Length: 67
Image 1 (tube, helix red, strand yellow):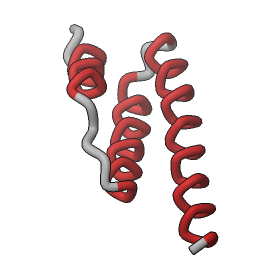
Image 2 (cartoon, one colour):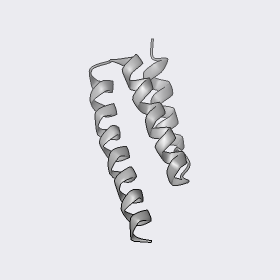
Image 3 (tube, helix red, strand yellow):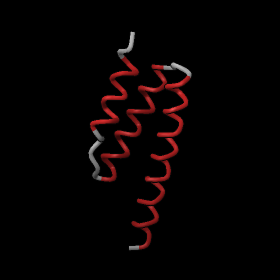
């Protein structure tokens, strides 16, 4: 059981790190890279059995289609 908890903790830590990196990519307006990182975050959400929030989806749409 402890291995499952450690694994989940690690996946959450990676996801949070990617969220921080996504914010930096957004500020730098590196849209293509931001989309890829966002996709990785969504995959980790799926792995954790969590839904990607509506706010995260809205932010991605604003970033991707802001032109």
